[in-house]
Amino acid sequence: MMRVLIVDDSVFMRTVIRDILTKDPAIEVVGTAIDGVDALAKIRALDPDLITLDIEMPRMNGLEVLKELGTWEKRPRTLMLSSLTSKDAEMTRLAIELGADDFMLKPKDITHVRGIGDDLIAKVKHMFRFRFSPIRRISRGGVGSEMATRIVMIGSSAGGPQQLDQLLMDLPADLPAAVVVTQHMPPGFTAALAERFNRICPIPVRESQSGDNLEVGRVLVSKSGFHSVITANIGSDGRRTGRLVHSSAPPLHGVRPAIDKIFISGAPVFGKNAVSVILSGMGNDAGEGAAAVKKAGGTSLICREEDCLVYGMARSAIEHNAVDQVVPLKRMAKEIVRIVSQMEG
Image (cartoon, rainbow, N blue to C red; front, side):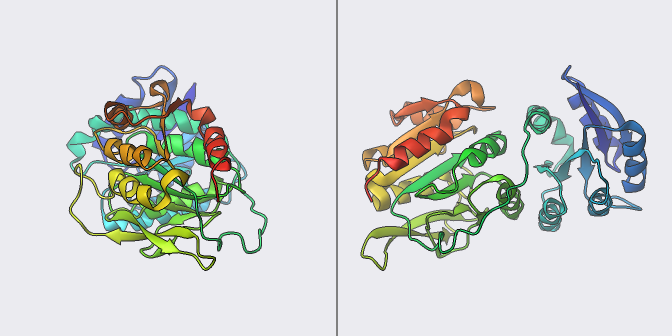
């Protein structure tokens, strides 16, 4: 049984979150707190496994709670619930730096909060089950500046961050390819996502910047608010490689970044040395891109349905006849390594 404390200054949010979480028999809501001061007292008294934590609260805000918890020998896991504002995006990034375990976005219209119920339950259960220790990287002098001739492009949406935890944690530090993750997310929040992934992935992770070279030993998370597009580049050794640039073109499939944009642009640059991976997500994004990767001689992988919260994007690839393999999430990293190791270059 997962014991959860809800921390939010809004009585409406406390009520709705409690209603959502108590629908799952594996979750017990042990209490609620109205601000940070109340939260710290309740954490000491109730010893929850996990707290959902609002950022902006009177007396003591969420960041101040995290700073205090950072001095405790034993602390609960922390899920930040963030509003869709640029201010909250920056505060969410700071929250991750201060030790928050994960974050989730609240709808702009709080009356629509119940609509994220399934995702919230999945996130809480994932945080309880998913055990990891922060990566302690050993300097690999010079690795990371080598231009990549092989690429792994990963696309995900609703339910994707939980899967990315597992996949990125399982990738080996010496993977001989560049990796780009494109996750549907509102502007401002991919910096926090990259910061979080960087704690658990053996390969360094950061948010993309326009003009980034695609390098071996680096994971780039596509910056939200822009499309990520791969352009051809010739390395100093004369081999064909690529560069990631940001595009302000209109949203595709209602999203920006769109997975189709990076898959379709990356396919002709890397050809048979490209792997596309589709994880959980709603809608049709990624299907056309997977078809482009397959047509160019690359390999198209999708995660099996039972491992996904939503199967729309993977199903789109199936409908485009663009799937080489359906892979269980726990085997996805090993399959990527196997495919990449057989590539030329």
